[in-house]
Image: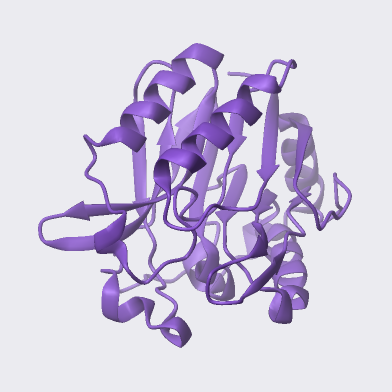
Length: 259
């Protein structure tokens, strides 16, 4: 188990529907980081932007992007994670991929597809919540619109870190800021949200506001609206201390979620 986890959040503008160009961009950024990092967190649909035309950019789990993630993860000895458009069994998925240096891959399919943009008509929603373990940390990966649904994120597994990757637009950025803080506080967990910046081909503006919050909802980084790379240290002792002292999670309601 690792007491301290070093996380790098990469807030970037995405190149529309161009996986190769995005891979090159992120590879250059990741390799420019000189510090020892445990996890690099990219955005939702980081190879394409939030497109409703998956047939143009979708890959399989044996495609170039997954191979790239595995290769780069091994080279920098760190996890590479973010969501990718995956084609599988005649469906398209908005899939969070968590790639470890030893080649292990854990995936989560976005549960709440964004109906306002018609995502539910194009992508198949996931049905399983995922909590993975890495270096002794229990991590729950989620994607963008999932942030609005606290029941799905409810910390019944005693996870230590919640990660959201997103393409969250400027007009609703106040909701992003508020809900990330709420998810950290109610679940007594570190909460990371990585959002993109720039303007997509549909004219939607994105202003980042990527954030890292501790288990009491206190920010560990500064709000930025431009491309940036931030490195933050998470300490397991913080989670253990506040849960032992405050014991709020002991008063959770018991329920079963039927999907």
